Length: 248
Ligand SMILES: [Zn+2]
Image (cartoon, rainbow, N blue to C red):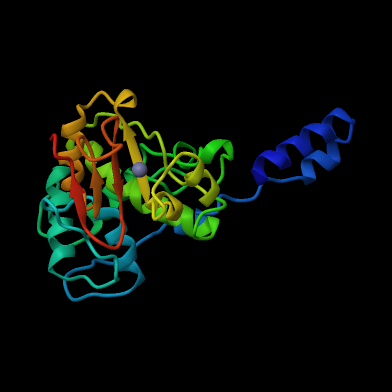
């Protein structure tokens, strides 16, 4: 929204002949720019810290069925196993140690706004027409960070589905937006760690999406046969595990 307002101001300034003013009105850097990360050395089991956290975010979609990776900056066995699956998923030698090959693959999968290559913030911020990450249960910055984590899990899910594009039909919802669309009072969409994959927006079958999501580390996955979820698969990183799609 802020960016849009600035563009309008710039356009107005140009219309008024004030080119100098227009040039001075610069768009803010993307809020997530600080999240583009460069690793400085090999990481393996037993390591900890920010470098591990950033790695965990990018391999969190490479889990075994029903498992969720805790993003805690501790390179434990679950992180090593996720790194190993990531490596074999991209044809690298799979040893569970994150070194140059692994980091180069991650860089290759990262676009200039620091999100994974096949997902954009704009796919998640419809927010009842607001086109912003504002108004949820967390700050817009935190909402974008939560969404970035979801994106990396979806990137893994997409790759495992033979690189088939995934269509997002709902991401962040402000509290008001969530109420107006009849979302649950505790819907993770208000924390922006949720995404809906609508049937009409996806070429992959509903139940295939459901099962793929179970291998991508989401704690909350609701689909066909769960009330109000026949037309989309809902994935999220809520605090408790809830996987339900009785018709899948
Ligand atoms: Zn949902």
